[in-house]
Image (tube, rainbow, N blue to C red; front, side, top):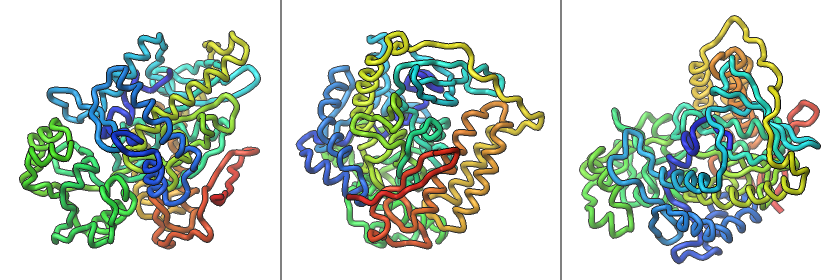
Length: 496
């Protein structure tokens, strides 16, 4: 397992809210499918949705058998937060990572840390990775690794937005790597924004879970109820209507200069527990935020990459030997992900992709299938003497994406954003501390903007101010892209 940080660390999993949605706790497979399709606004891949609903319970039982502390509600398995003080940035789902890391240790899996993958190439001799150790800095010598198959599970692109709840290095590298390897991507215009992030000055930016937010009232500075004002009827809104709630909040905050609050005032411990919510969360919110005595300021942030590599039911991409799972893959969620389906997706399709990749590799030459470290790859590109600050360049990229390809989009802003992102991509090679990572981030940003420019309607998490209505006559389907003959080849496939 190759990663930028230590096993399981720096991942979206450890920061997740901790709910695995599924046919669990009395919810049927049919209900899980219906909820997922409703959230996806008509363009989910039905085959993938059915796999998620069918396999989820078995994968949940795996986690329980491996020792993950948990509780159950109707339609979800929840990981329990660790006991004691949770720290400045609480890792509510750290027990998932600990559970999986322990199991990996039992199986003797090798981890290679502090490594950035720069390129994936599939050929007759297997799947070859070019990777840079020591974080991918300009002086890092590249190495090549050869395996019978590769599973790409490197997360999404939330970290390329100015306001996000992702780990800092979650910068969309997986999508650019997949495209460069020859894989077809889909639904790249859909970036989900989570509406309920506490934005109290001087306090950690904490995610309020959908079932928690459902106990409060969301209102603006004037006291107007946001759900009523914008006709949002789904409940819990933060699970089933993340798209419309984020867009309503953006309208109030960015365009009208308002503030949005979640009011949990007066909620008692007894009432909290009656809704089967974790007592650990109640104590933390009360101690750190005084959450039950006053309204708390909230804001939307970039949260989840809905699109990614096009896969089959076993995680296989269009490139032989290359598999994808989690935010690296697309198709499951349609135009908007339902809350809880992200963690469920990782265990369901991670399991399927891993098994399929192992089977594929075992069918090839045994020496190649077990993986090898080869001699160094191509030497590092010569560094331009006019170095640029990589951290500042990433901040510039984040600002561009938030302003021009964020919650509210239009043709003019997207065109401006595309030009600036291309400039940043050209500058990335001069970033001595992280040229590979920044270059891949800029490529993914360009894909998001180009896809958003092409979809001339509003659907799910993609809102175009110049095309504010859903347009089933022309856009009930999926945008797909692949690189052919050095150029991006875009196509649109209507839903059958």
